[in-house]
Length: 229
Image 1 (cartoon, rainbow, N blue to C red):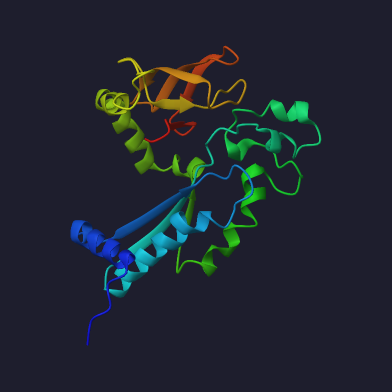
Image 2 (cartoon, rainbow, N blue to C red; image 1 turned 90 degrees about the vertical axis):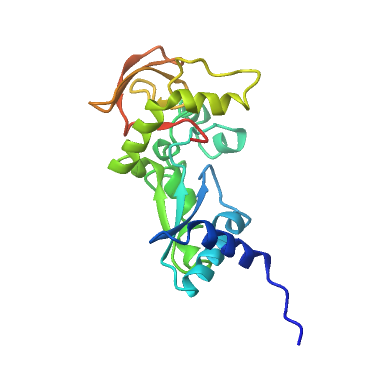
């Protein structure tokens, strides 16, 4: 009898097992930015496909973990449909550039923007995945392991700049660029700050805000790495 062809997702599981099978724990990770209403299409790549691969590996005897990172430190864009959620649009414009988790819930029923738009999506993940651990980035950066990773990126930033500049032909980063974006303590923005210096021993950075002009210091818990890092 002819054997049925292997499904491509089983081939992905085989690839993971070949490359990482000697590890005690195999981690599958996805990521979402809660910039607004979550649509069902986001389940495919970040939840369902990862879960299937992890489930296949678990059934084969591997210890696995499935995580989903919520990019809660991403800056709020203040697009037209986002502004329209607020009764006071002018006030809402003051939130542009703020980390998503700091933007108020426009309807006042949750503590912030992320919690409001996650309610109709997050609680139902269990129907599409065996087990999934949700990790918001504003909580992730409080963990010692994450802070150590941030420091490593800063220490090795010349290598980081070299890699990123391969894809930034028009606007390459200079050798003095530091890939960390602190939250401005004056205006609250995370998309307009520029790190000037770093104190790795104290785990702090000195920065200037290009939006409001404020200059100050922030800890490595009060900001984020540049996108893609």
